[in-house]
Amino acid sequence: MMMRSLKWSALALAMTLPLAAHAHKMWMVPSATNVSGADPWVTVDAAVSNDLFYADHMPVQTDRVVVTAPDGQTANVEHAFTGQYRSVFDVHLTKPGTYKIAAVNGGLFASYEVDGQKRRWRGEPANFAKEIPVGAKNVDVSESISRVETFVTNGKPSDAALKPGGKGLELVPVTAFTDLVTGEPATFQLLLDGKPAAGLKVSAIAGETRYRNAQEEIDVTTGKDGKFSLNWPHAGMYWVNASTQDDKTSLKQAKQRRLSYSATLEVLPQ
Image (cartoon, rainbow, N blue to C red; front, side):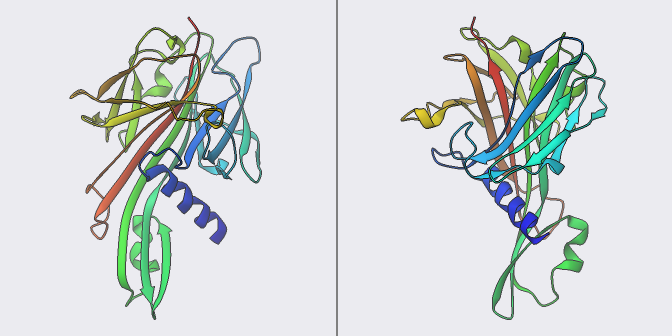
């Protein structure tokens, strides 16, 4: 349990740090984003790494992964395996339409001192008062909500699985995920707690960064309606990321809430 807590503290930190050339990035990459046939499956790699999409740091724990089927119901994560650097799992696409695959992490993070020794804690707001020792000093509390997603469509696309939940940063497609091609701008909307997230920086980075001297990051800013557009320079898998912070915490002792969103999207040649 301690090791799992430490791992998720590291994951939350990776998701809330400002985007930088060498910052760790959390991602999920499906074996295909568009499938068809009588009995389709996809295999998903999930990891935190320096280079996109090359597993070299730590895996994403699959118990945090939620698959939403085209009918809005939760689908199963199957054949899950977690290794040293990445997790792998399968999704059986039993229904036609678009699936959302998300790894969600959130909670409170605290540092404090007891008898002169520094300690750390991670948990839910309801457990804060009873799990932080009475008399703890220099208590510093922050809240984090991070979401990492990817999308797979079986046959004709649908939007039931894409409805936002109204908490944290979320992405809503204006251009369908199945219509992302080079040479054509794609438009999305970023929401914060269900409302348009205005003035946020959004970055997109193509994969295979370990074979480039530069990240070749594409930066745009959301408008008042939370919308932004991306022009894809070439085909491939892209990591799209946005982050922000505010003081809308769920616990009064927490002074800051950190929020992050990332998605892996496939862009096809025209």
